[in-house]
Image (tube, rainbow over all chains, first blue to last red; front, side, top):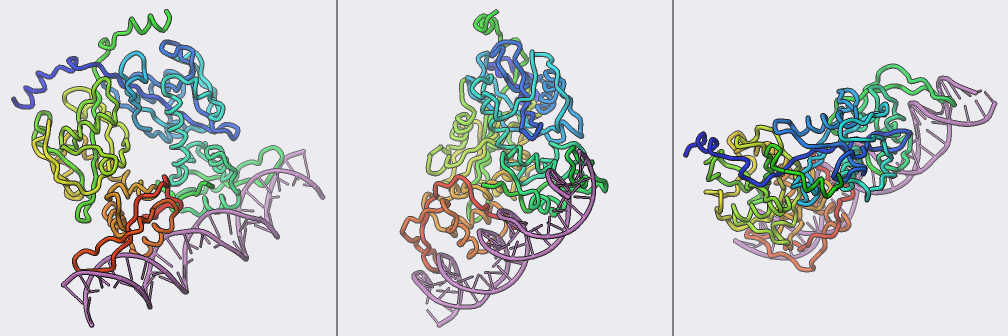
Amino acid sequence: MDEREFLKAYDPHAFPPFAVTVDVVLLTVREGVLSVLLVERETHPFRGRLALPGGFVQVDEDLEAAAVRRLAQETGVRRDGDSVGAHVEQLGAFGDPHRDPRMRVVSVPYLVFAPDLPAPTPGSGASWVAWVPVRAVETDRLAFDHAAVLGAGVERARAKLEYSPVAAAFCTEEFTVADLRRVYEAVWGVPLDPRNFHRKTTGTPGFLVPVGRDSVPGPGGGRPAALYRRGDAQLLHPAMLRPH
Amino acid sequence: MDEREFLKAYDPHAFPPFAVTVDVVLLTVREGVLSVLLVERETHPFRGRLALPGGFVQVDEDLEAAAVRRLAQETGVRRDGDSVGAHVEQLGAFGDPHRDPRMRVVSVPYLVFAPDLPAPTPGSGASWVAWVPVRAVETDRLAFDHAAVLGAGVERARAKLEYSPVAAAFCTEEFTVADLRRVYEAVWGVPLDPRNFHRKTTGTPGFLVPVGRDSVPGPGGGRPAALYRRGDAQLLHPAMLRPH
DNA sequence: TAAATAGTGTCTCTAAGACAGTATGAG
DNA sequence: CTCATACTGTCTTAGAGACACTATTTA
């Protein structure tokens, strides 16, 4: 039998059914606090419980595209090269045989970083959507294994800030060194020395590109800060060190 | 409708069929060269082409267990806490809609490190098995998207050696500092200064535990080296730096 | 003996941590 | 003016890279 005949005779329905879902761990920093976008599930299973946005992948759909689609459908948050989607990264596969009571489901979560966004609006499958501070999430009340997924996402985010310049994905296109420092402080949960942080970030080639203009100081004053955009470096050399 | 009724009425076969497979990127260091275990496919699709060991996950089977099972079935390499399986790590999910001509398949590859092992024997689904130096793999002739999977595995291994003590998983239970250095040199593909490497590895707390005995020198002589076991550190602090 | 490998010591340089001191805004 | 934030400079110290030197084996 050659390959063509083989494929013609192949019946996918002959095998026990699997499903593949995607979930989105969408993180942002609001008021100095690392927060995650959660929805309240509108249907069984886990109806009424909080969960990450997500859902079934369509047969002909790319995994990352499915994640972005479900995020938009459930929460109204759309991909947009400059803000949401500046950083989208796969978190792995979660496939415990009993993670979903309906059937065997393997879920592929995606980690997304976003700047502080307007309030999301509930859509299909969600009766409620909101940003929840990560430290305030009641992990043992999340649907499915989303506590583990969220934990993996936060841990990945913390590690990623050390050796990559993705922290800028939490900021608007133009930002100050202090904006960026507040991202690191929120994600790592530790205060950083503003002066050493300034020296490190502005001194690492390719991390920050000066815009040439200054920000306007907030209420209470302070010297205006220079504005920067993200540079083209893919890796930080040497890495930002997280205080131990 | 409550949750029980909902689940009773749920028909998994009503949805388009997905399949989930696992693949194994089994790496070792043989004669100073980073090598990967490849099989020749016995059946369509990609019959006769080289591929990573792997196969379909069973409905009630854990993903990592499936990877270990397929590795044993196809190649005879068995899990064994001290050698193969000293380090097993998920590499993510590969789910391009057309990566498999039979049907929609999402594959979850696992990265495994092993010490130099006895020659493997072909089993179910494989007509041939062998260790192939990673640099000698003809990536454009591998089955499916295994070139990308192998690339991700090698890149992950390189990064992992920097901040974790997993390099010891490439060695037998007791090993010398030079054995460990040869692992780093093979995986990173660069020579390292033996003296600085010695200072770094023996000076990092929790990395190496001295056994108290010496190795026997090879032919050609040389001073016997102290033997070590892997320590209990999970992370290297500070990290081993890969020469840029 | 020479050659090979193991292990120690020492110097230099980069860069991180801990600040002091200056600049420029708001109120 | 004071207060707040931005930015620059300086000192100390940990640790990486580049060696020289000593130790212990085989041939």
